[in-house]
Image 1 (cartoon, one colour):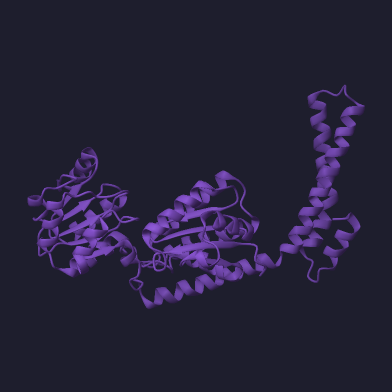
Image 2 (tube, helix red, strand yellow):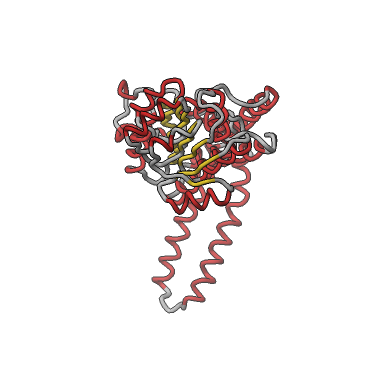
Length: 385
């Protein structure tokens, strides 16, 4: 497969959260039409033509030996990676919903900026189709990343049976609170916005808590799940009490919201979103096998589509040549007959378009069935394409 597509990939296992955030900010600042930027908890990835990706890498200062864990893929390896990502095979929770939603949003935003390269556009469509199919195979009730965060925190078990503090009232915070409640734990919600914390707490039938708890308040919690866009500032006395209390902390924020010094003092009782991303995939062996087959089947569909690119290219060139000739002849006609009104011109344009389509129908169909390339070569020679 000709390398018509390429990608720049930064994953949690290779690139620290802060470096990924910096890379994402740099790439966002220089986004152009024709590229797709995907940001998730565990990855920052840019897709486009090889030339577009190389320019983006140069602008971000991540070329050659300075790449520091950032991978560059193109052709078949990138196609397999993107399909695997869409079906959820690359996720810690196999076939989880969030990554497919994030891909759809990234693609919609990219298409809003301009047309995507045809090879990338087709690959994304096939990948998202496969992703939707994969979700029909997954268990109806499967864990989310927030479920995993609570489960891993409780597994640490150092904080006892006390309540769990969820810091963050967005989607991930709500999922974490529900996961803790489902496991029979008492929960309190904190947020930068007291109103949002109170609203989520009320909807779940739990308590709201201060965003910056006192030392006395923090000591009552067995564990903390943090899901914020930005830092979680704690007074030194509160941080000391948190360390001394034996509570665990799971930070779902990307980049981390917990101060690195505090995370270091918590030691094994602290888990970041990157730590969760390094866990073994959660899902049955049967599901893994089905997802792997789906990835390869979808990749083969993409290979077959790419194999027809020369025919599509010749057909496009022929259609474009016909369009150019029709436009030139109509422009000359309007100069010769300036008295035609808008309705009359419209009828002439429709007739010219129908005539062009009728004349091209058979040649384009024959090009579509060009197994050995002879018709394609003949068309290029005859029409000077």
